[in-house]
Length: 423
Image 1 (tube, rainbow, N blue to C red):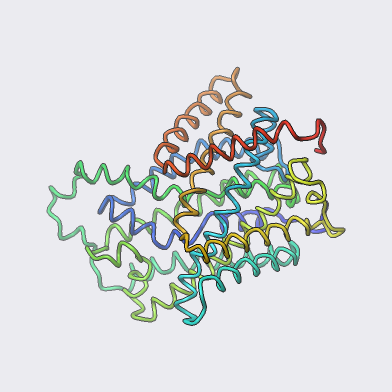
Image 2: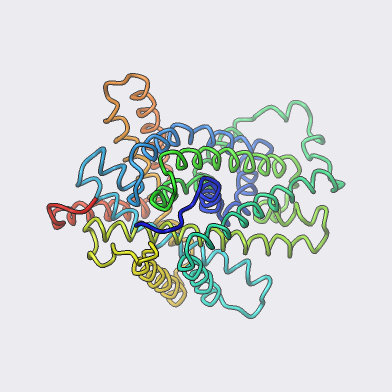
């Protein structure tokens, strides 16, 4: 895929940020508070630490094996064709449910601004905007993503800072006795219970990996974008979670819509509208970045021989037009089906959510295999394997079954692929 304009490290980092930060962030600090009380922010600290070994592994693979294959290429390179095809099917089965789910989540926010729009209309609109932006090319889409990444970081962090500086609320923990401020057993359990809930806020780097061939210098830019985006996102997450845990009072709104409470705390009733606007922008940015990444995964599947060859062709400007059109069609179909069958977004997320961690597990196993004779790197890989393996058992049985069926299908299709395929 040889486009005449590729993204540099700033745009690559912006794409990573907008892929990672999803609409779920607007509720997750409240959920961690509901589970762990004043210590809810510690769940975010722990997950940030747990992600570091995995990011070392992604950084290694992205520097040594950058391609449109992303994590699929990493797994195929380290574990062989069968595992690569299993990963390919898991990726395709995850994107086709997860990204439409994000678009439908955004429908709830846009409905607060435009009262007459239906979830179907807004969900399809989000996907179509992503399609048009992707078709416009990296010069335009990269500029949009860079601007939106900056706006989201400033907007979300600004709501928290504004609350600290201008609200009259005192930290709720000041009213507690010193004995109560010690972590109790129930709060400790809550800290660990919140981990699987907020893990989804730390997925996205596996999707960024599919953008390698769109970067000017992927060996250099991919690792930089991974680490810079991680530190920016982790600091913002922990900061917001700490504010919510410190100032929240025991009512349902703080638990389900904490950003609305933060905004109203210093902007009044208009704060709710501000949050709704930021949420819509967040969803648009998230869907655009995820759509571009998913289209590259589908393009790679065609180029690799997993899907028909025509899907793996690109236009003269370097854009995978056919793959993007197929991506848009599939996502629109899933949104329509979900709406008319009244399945609910939670069904899509339950089925697809933990698949990302199955990919993390395969990458960690592959990294450990490659470095089996290098003591410290082998230890790092084994730590990552243990962490992801534990994470997988925190998720739903239906989701694990769905992931297993995808992997079995990929294994079966591996035997049907041509014996040779283009690199």
